[in-house]
Image (cartoon, rainbow, N blue to C red; front, side, top):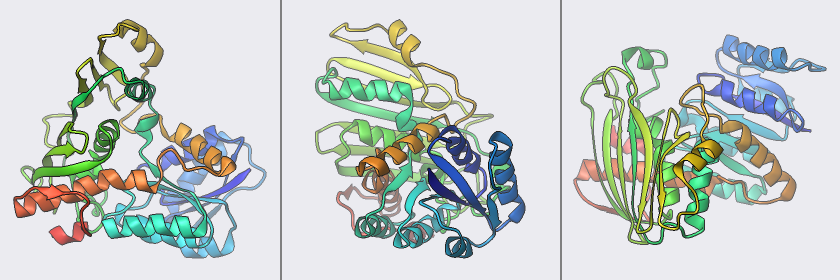
Amino acid sequence: MYKMELIGCGRISYKHVQAAIENKDKIELVAFCDPIKERAAERCRQYTDALEVDQNPLIYTNHLKMLDEIDCDIVAIATESGFHAEIAIECMKRGKHVIVEKPMALSTEDAERMIQTADENHVKLCVCHQNRFNPPIQKLRQALDAGRFGRIIAGNARILWNRDINYYKQAPWRGTYEQDGGCLMNQCIHGIDLLQWMLGGEMDWLNGTVGNYMHPYIEAEDYGSIQIRFKNGAIGNVEGTVCVYPKNLEETLTIIGENGTVAIGGLAVNKIETWDFADGKDTLEQVIAECNGDVENVYGSGHTPLYADMIEAIEQDRVPYIDGREGKKGMEIILATYRSSQEERRIRFPVDHIRSLDFI
């Protein structure tokens, strides 16, 4: 059994508790931490109500005190994004494996420090891009790896959502450059991660533009558009917004190749909508029956297999499926987009140090 502590008990944290419950043969949650004690207690109740535990987990409001007093193997971090790097580095310096929510950091320098700290302390660092584990996404990746597309021409990620003033009032840190970023960094980073992963992950340059059209009460963008040229020649296109009226419209990923076209949509890129290949090895109906499934919300169901992979990575002493180096790529694209928009120019990779605070 691996003892785990959870730091940050807000909106997304219940998915981490759920993932621990569904990996109960390997994970025991021993402590919960949040500056608001009641939120930590609520997550603790979620855990204890689902499982019969010999000893109730402890509740903390200070993560350093928790780390000092309670031993563990793994720490899950689901705080405001601006705290991810500082907390993760502290945990890894203490020899803890870390699962950190997206984005892993809000500066390229902090992301690099996290990666270096994991390496130096021989611990695993996993970033929560859980949609990579979706069955349709895995099926798409298998088709790519098998060469079924032939030459990849382009990919498109569209995240057309709605977030109103009530969403931002729930947590004042949302939409700030210090703790969050805008719609690209918060809502669209999963789609951006999937796009770059499918198109090769090695960027040549990008052009990006962002703006705030309907949310004057936040610092960052509510709409963004990105064009990315990958080193293999493929073009990636991103459109992301929280301005759609009156509710979320779509989250889709499309890959176009010389011998195949695939489009995946659904609430959390969980349903194959188009599946056409020249080799004729399978039909749309076949892959729908194999892969498509319902999810309860935009968070999907990928945290549970992500946790299972992290445990396996520890036991086999291998790199997690989504380690720090992989987790850095999506946030780096977004930070480069902010710079491209601000300076009205093309940004080439690799980029130098960029941080979200540069754009206040």
